[in-house]
Image 1 (tube, rainbow, N blue to C red):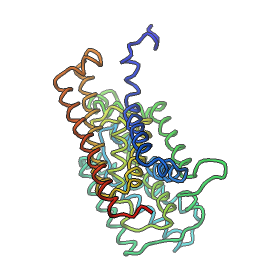
Image 2: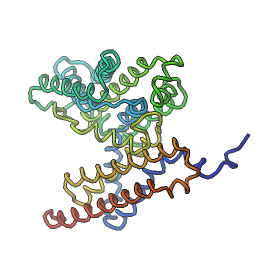
Image 3: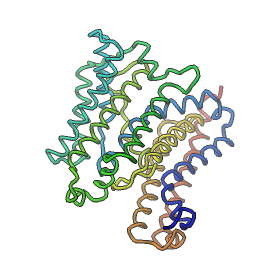
Image 4: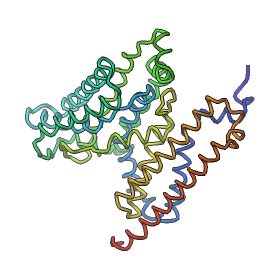
Length: 371
């Protein structure tokens, strides 16, 4: 029986590649910002901003890891977060429910909407992409009908504490919530049938069904978990802003999917990394914060996010193809013509990203006052 020390370096590194990718990008951001804006970027107040931004997406990324691992996708999480936040607001402000009951209502309602998504996909056989996109329109429409264009604001202290509060001796409350939820997700993925079956379903749904796994049931479980996480994110967003409206959280889905994919969970299913998703959330939050610190416009931020997503998906697609083809060692796989082309494309994309960042920094520096 071989020990970990006797395994080749490639085999020992493989399980951690999903985390090493975003960690390397995080290190690059730290080095770049240490040169460009060390005083502003490394302030404790800015660190707090990064953590609070990441905390909002941690529950969503945890649940999305299971959905994507099963070869699914959920594009409705932003509208679920907005709708559950509005329902909670009405429960508290119009019907006089205690704040903690309102939080439970939001999470339970989110899980119910996730159940609806799961049933649409499994019972009506609507593809995940189309089904959740259509339900996104439905949920957003309900939110618009309920809110009637109003911004619902000024919530009890419990809600604002969940969104931006701080324990006097510990991390901010939303960060603590995000970490706890991620630990639960890690346990579910590594120690339960739900996690193992999710990977099996994503690897080969037909084979999983032939072995006796209730594929549809576990897909529904994943979407229920996703809906509950979106409900919790709606509560956290409401508390963070101390307000909620029907158009809130418009880009939640893309941000969360990007974080999960950057973290190494395969869009083609069968490969999951909860730690990678955690690192992906932190990476995107740090990247967006760095672009804001450099005074780069929002449009350039979108471009940078897209480049990171394309590069990450290309890298992990190459990893999966290498595994399927049985490449003889890591260095041998780097020497193939296909890999050489991929590395060149990645280099061009990263170079384009650096040029865009520099371009945006120079031109935004001319129009935005420094003090």
